[in-house]
Image (cartoon, rainbow, N blue to C red; front, side, top):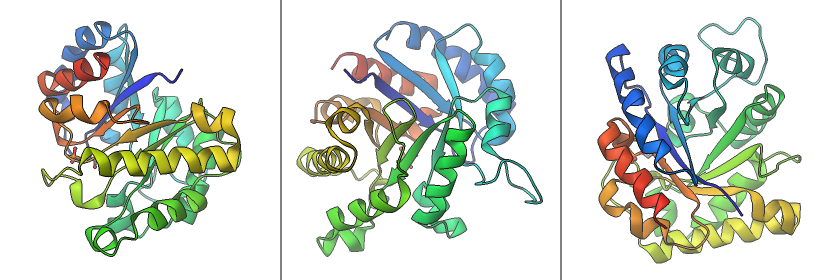
Length: 250
Ligand SMILES: O=C[C@H](O)COP(=O)(O)O
């Protein structure tokens, strides 16, 4: 049985005052014992966020890591550093990293291995652009991203896959539940085919893109959706708490 996961990606948002939102999430996470709750704040807040979450069920993660453990890479952060700061997870291959920093799936593959070496759980993001969906290439794109970015050695304990259609991120546009189900069923089948049924069925699959408390319930009822990777709606504990509640209720 896969544990559900509500993951919040704060992206480039959050000053120290926002740590109170993490404290406010503690009772909401405690009220949802069947769900893992994760917040990925900007790098500057990881260590204080770990402190703010101490004693609660809320876990803290990073939003990217370098493929090397250390070295001459100005401005970068390694998986080992995230782990040392108290992080348990790291988001890799988010479409904003692919767009802003030219990350390719091959780069994501190397970062995932670095994350595993640092004992972090990798949350690997995949998803199609609007042009790709309109050209009916969604499954080909998602399949290729999975093939190239997921290394051998994946397990349900070291990896989560997030399906995030680029056109749904921050736009308020959400795919239909049929569209989400089609991609999640495809991802599940692909994982089972490549890694075997045991591993393939153990990896959690998240949906991401304009999830909020009001639409979370119907998304979480879609087959093979094990939770969500949430951007804007994770910034406030009240809204993210509603998403956690919806996940716990499925
Ligand atoms: O990582 C989160 C996703 O990019 C979704 O962002 P959003 O919930 O603001 O659409």
